[in-house]
Length: 122
Image 1 (cartoon, one colour):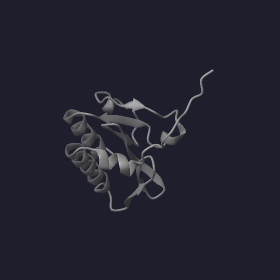
Image 2 (cartoon, rainbow, N blue to C red; image 1 turned 90 degrees about the vertical axis):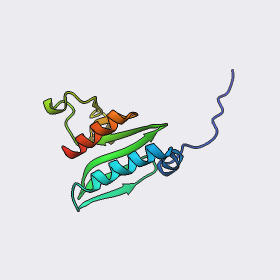
Image 3 (tube, rainbow, N blue to C red; image 1 turned 45 degrees about the vertical axis):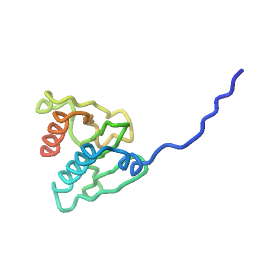
């Protein structure tokens, strides 16, 4: 029987952010600024996995990076009729995304513009 050898560690959010190309990094910064501009009381917290944006104790959004794809998790109802035209994925069953169940992947310019519209709807 062969043994499984796993070596290495997972990259942190900061390492993934530094590995992005200039266009994707600019998109992350614009999304970050749009979320922080929603209210003066919105604060950012960076952990190993993602950047979390809180308004008091309530989580408003999360930004994570998976390869070259940016994932934005928002505190919106993915089943709402207003957001039926957006490609939102419902992650409400996972406990870590219970507060921010609507996820949109940003891998194109259209998805980036849609994410900015969804952030404006927060």
